Image 1 (tube, helix red, strand yellow):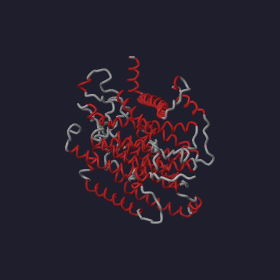
Image 2: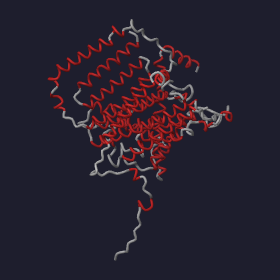
Image 3: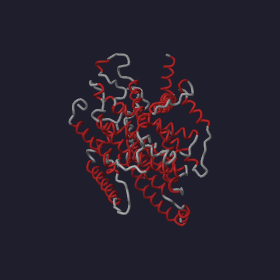
Image 4: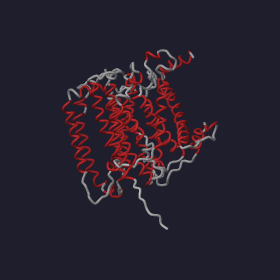
Length: 200
Length: 351
């Protein structure tokens, strides 16, 4: 076993362990944190596959942004652990069946029959100065220009839809309007000098 | 000396891991010393700004104060709250300190002096600084205390918001330099104009936004709502004591130094001399060198302290307004401007 294989198996083992913990831990915060660990170890495996750009972006986007917001929501949930625990045994057989079927399907599609080394030779290792970021950029903005732009527009639509859903006005709630507040002038808006007669 | 160089080369060929370890120590040890004396500088500078003297009892003029603080924190008891989640409670400080130190791995101190000269250096730094937020969130949640939890929620929302503005500001830099490698970014700022060739001039709005977002990202005043001692006692680290607390402290100050150094690197030409090369060629200390990087970093470090002594704390909704409605639109517009300038090869900087 070469050193590279050893590193791969270490990270793969951590990844499988973390993924299992995500679905078996009762506390959703623990599950979310194990999901972070799973993302991180898969980024390390991508790094081994010489996909440095994608590995760092995975950490930046999923670990650094998506999971932070996810944790943010999960931490604020008030969850009753007992009700979560209740259905576990009764759903277990169905769950195992579905999981086994999916694993079989994945194996049939991406197994060694279709993607083995005899069908696709292992790509040659690149030199240290090979710039993977520039290569991805070149392909993304030339060959895959339209799919890339369409994906961007779909995301934009999703953002606008999410904002639109939460933008309902409720007249009975009181809130501050910062854009009004920052426009306040020192003169008549904020301070008013009142002259009063002195009392005895 | 010759024997030492021979040993170093032998290490590089046979035990490269030991050589890398030595390099890491050479970066981290001075960094920790800088962090210790940054806290001293903070107390002294803010003291003078508030017409006080600051620490002056331990050692000559208080010079040994940070050492005394470190010793005190090391020998303090580590208190773990009864219903806290023990493992996460102790992991959280490490998650703050770890990324703050790991980000220095790709930092170029001079042309040759860099631990890992990778192509996507800028991206790596962004990824590492974004991982640092987990320390704060996990600390707030694991403490099982409402003040800590409020601090964690505030800080998570704030850091995620300002990261976007910060990322966009850096996109402007990489469009201008045409590279993600930090060394290449500095070299792209080299030119006959000296300091007028640096990116602070063509990218002025991004420069200002990057530094302000950096202050918000490190949870420093006036953006320190995560700690807000007058509102939520001390926020996410209210339940921490001894070494775990010291880890948060070290992480925060290491991050401040990192942001200062990155601003110097990205917008003020890093180790480049502010004078045109033809004037100072061969003049001692006026040419390019690591000392310029240290001077620039120290200036931004001073800005951090100056801001803290000057401004009152922002209100929470104003922080969000500033981040989302002011900074992000400005950065997006300026990225377009920079893109056009690069495409049409605007003279002085991009030709």
